[in-house]
Amino acid sequence: MLSHSCVSKDFWAEAINTAYYLVIRSPSTSIEFKTPFEVWSGSPADYSNLRIFGCPAYAHVRDGKLEPRAKKCIFLRYATGVKGYRLWCTDQKTPGLIISRDVTFNESASLDSQKEKAIAKTDHGVIDRIKLEI
Image (cartoon, rainbow, N blue to C red; front, side, top):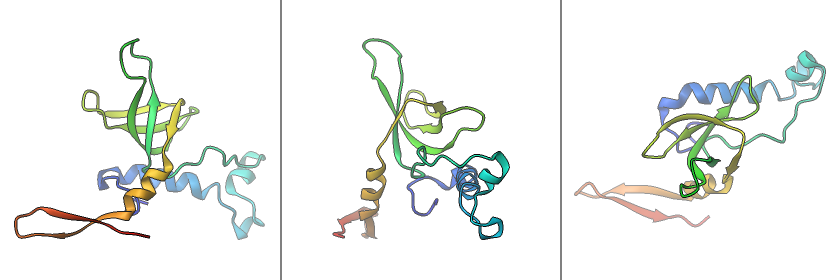
């Protein structure tokens, strides 16, 4: 998950927690194609809140009438104990982790960023960027 997303390796623990969240909601052959979550809780898992790890997200905030209505963040994992998402805020003024329920995700942007890759470095240390057509 870390290699596919544009998230720093500093967030490896968040990637592990997201992977765990997905594993317990995946069917297993050892328990007759049920999910561990379903066996433990007795109710089927809800897949409507699944998102792509590392995708851009916009957490809606109410800081004031003249302030921006959303903060640009990166989706890290599903919050535990509350109904919401754990996000890394990339805002220069207030960087850090936030938990929010009111979030808009741009899951297609993370896939588009994979198309554009740094190919080579020149002698001057400038990265030549080439758009790959897929």
